Amino acid sequence: MSTRSLIGYTKNLNNRTKVTYVYCHFDGYPSGVGQTLVENYNTEEKIKELVSKGDLSSLGKTLESSEFYIDRGEDFSQIAPKCVSKKEFSGEHSWIDYVYVFCCNQMQWKMKSRTSKRFVQLIKKI
Image (cartoon, rainbow, N blue to C red; front, side, top):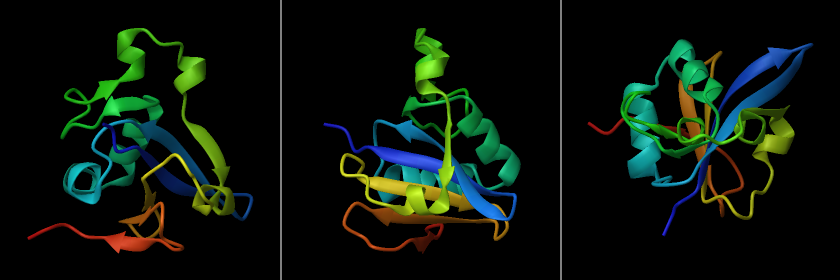
């Protein structure tokens, strides 16, 4: 069984906040994808590189150990990153278990679950 998630980052375009994001199929729970993001994709450069590769099956500690749909021959136009308003990204995603967003201006990860109304800061386990 999969725990589906969205992984994205914020950017400002014409004084509006947009989120560019991709879909991740497996291990989307906070101790899986969440912890991997906090520990390994903690700069704007790293998250943008991750998202630029499109949707993925599973997230690894490095891009090389991640499993992207493009690597198995899928049409990139179908799995390319999507860019939407922050409001649209923050809305309900009934088929997604967790949503993660890297706030570039704050240099921090935030997350929410399907049942949450708002995002909370995602912090590294000590």
